[in-house]
Length: 89
Image 1 (cartoon, rainbow, N blue to C red):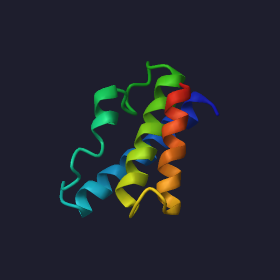
Image 2 (cartoon, rainbow, N blue to C red; image 1 turned 180 degrees about the vertical axis):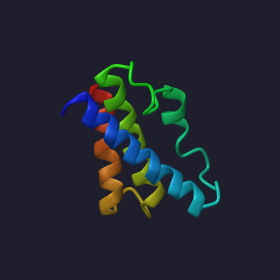
Image 3 (cartoon, rainbow, N blue to C red; image 1 turned 30 degrees about the horizontal axis):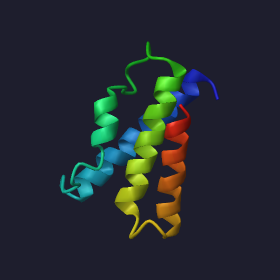
Image 4 (spheres, one colour; image 1 turned 45 degrees about the horizontal axis):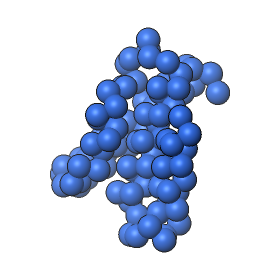
């Protein structure tokens, strides 16, 4: 995937994150803390391709955890997969 495509995906994930925050009225118990601590946001086009990948994986993991009922549900397994992808970068 090209860097521009990764940035577009990053923007989409941020939009999903914002909608989740809006729907849950900010009651997320720090679900996106790891992503925010990374400090790589879609408008940081100067950051590396791998930095954007890591940000996407962290966002995907946080979104999946927020939407899952437990770690054994299908979406819980998606969160675990994102966690493995983060570890590879």
